[in-house]
Length: 406
Image 1 (cartoon, rainbow, N blue to C red):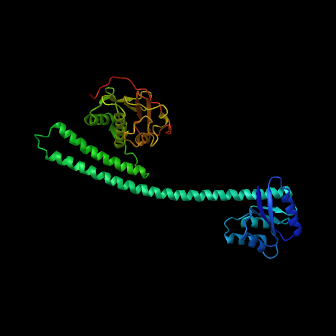
Image 2: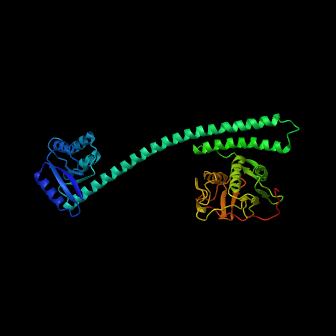
Image 3: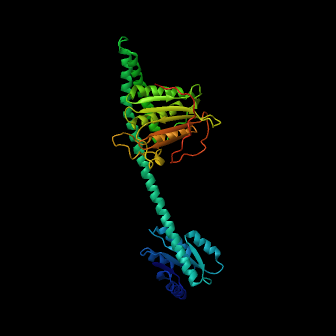
């Protein structure tokens, strides 16, 4: 490796001694350029590049520190590493030189050839490292600026998309409400009334989901609104809704008789969790198969946490995909391209559960179906374990008599 050093010293004997010491370097080849004054050094550096400069402090006219200050004012694209030569007892001069930009100093009467070579190599390495760090910082700043611009464009596109999505939903809602008012009572059967109600509620729910999607993409996640609620009642209602819409599947609700399934939870958040899990169960299982929703109480838990199971008989999750099933934008390799999905539903569902201090786990075998297990503490708790990419093992269901939605 070859390095170019500019030797700035008005003493001929010193220049010869330094040149000989560098010529004997066993690890490095030094190309030495020599000048006798600060003015000559500035003129040389304005034209030529140097990796290092060995600078005598005592120069005729401008001294070494003044030279360093002038060098900083030139704004050269690459400034050499600097080692200053001082006389014995001139520690104050050495400190001033370091403040002016030197990387090291040597006392003329005390350094050896090995110390000289080591000091120059260390100064060059320090300057190179500083340059690399500065280049990385500048690259990071440019990348951050590009990312900010991209996020701004993304947020604008999301805002436009959500606005456009809400238009058709409002039309659906208004038309369903008009039909409910205009259809004669003799024609309006209970089944028709129920279906129109489903349309209105689904449109409202979709509007809420669109707002939630926009909030999440902007990092504006809303805090939970905890209120006393009956999870069994909510699950029962959701099962009934799916029975009316997903008519090609069989839905079963199982829960021990007489057990308490109430807690302080955010009903809207848990509704999103249940819709995602049950929607996936329908999406990834064949027509005619059964989707089972099971509620239980974790008996060993002193807080009597509630367990919610969603069980399907679908395609299952390959073993290689299980560790990543709750990661955003990840979809199983056995999912057909014809099956729609963004790969964010399960990640969002797990986030909602963890905000409640609970856990969301999965047990699955390919071609054998999947079981998703939600564990919900009844009150405000901090989850004992932070979420990881790996799925958690679900607790065993507690026994007891059950009743079915069908």
